[in-house]
Image (cartoon, rainbow, N blue to C red; front, side):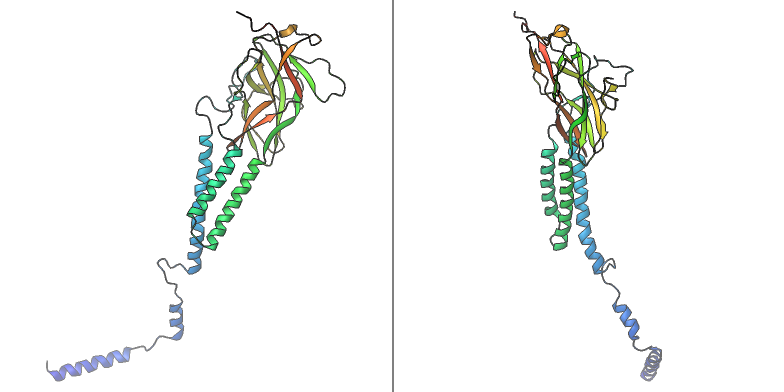
Length: 323
């Protein structure tokens, strides 16, 4: 092909392309193309900002939830049947039954766990939350919510309930002075034989409590002092003298709710027994107020339930026998 033919072909191709050129893009199309969001996933600045603010908070919340779920696992004793272990229901009251409702004090209680937990969570939140006013605000909201929940836990208590009874087995209730706000009852069970007395536990707080049982440990053995064997649940609405109904099983108490419990013990080796006469001279040991174990949101606590009466166990002066 000659140079003339090549030049002519090039002119024809250029002319054909010029005729097919649509010209510059319309202004509206260029404006729409300019508004297409840029970025790896096509997310706009607002969505990316929201993601950066929410993702750290969700991570903190997940860490907090995991910590709250694992804390109670370290607060439950590792041996024995567990707090307030119960047995299969029995048909009638058995004062010689051992075990149900008797538990141990937790190694750590809410008064220590809650402040330490909040302090630890505060350190975690401010350590992993990115810097910036929005992140600081989100972390502050999380901490305030946790602080409010911790305050509710600390404000929920187990207190002395509205009903009580000292009219159990192996207990003597002599005539009391008129108008006396408290009365005195005496354990008259024979040595090593059972006795029982009733009291109630009330939930005084905004959260539900899980009542685990009676703390009977921590009292050194004494020849003059009785021991506790089991706890039973009563069904008499106002206490009454009906006695225990069934072996204790852990129970949930809603705010303002209460439950009647009967504590069964065994008189000491030196107990004066049925021959005791309150009108004569005597020596006795006083039964201390009852300590109960309960939990709130899985966090354990204990409380002292003050009996509305003084329970005494008289003992023989000549006991223990001298070798």
